[in-house]
Image (tube, rainbow, N blue to C red):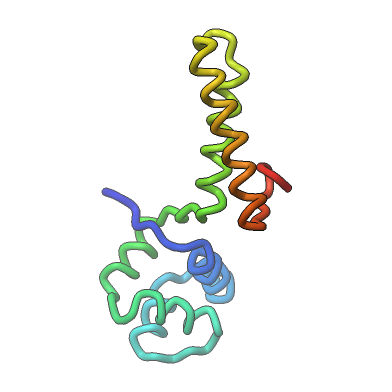
Length: 121
């Protein structure tokens, strides 16, 4: 069964709520259903799932995947380009293309005044 992807902040709220409730997912579900926001985490969870208790139950029972942030996706792509550039088994033309793309990525970040850990920070 596929796991639901949720934002990092919601995953953290669920884990914090589980800790406060001694691991009880059913208590989280009941508090969201009854709109008892005993913790700020319950409020965050409730707002995210917006009445979709079936999906929340699925997350609490079957687990979830944390969505990557745009920065994490960007960093992964940058590392992919770096690996191609450094791989001596790949053709020189493809290695040069990867190096050129990395230069373009860095220039774009600089022009937009954006810093991404592991890329230009």
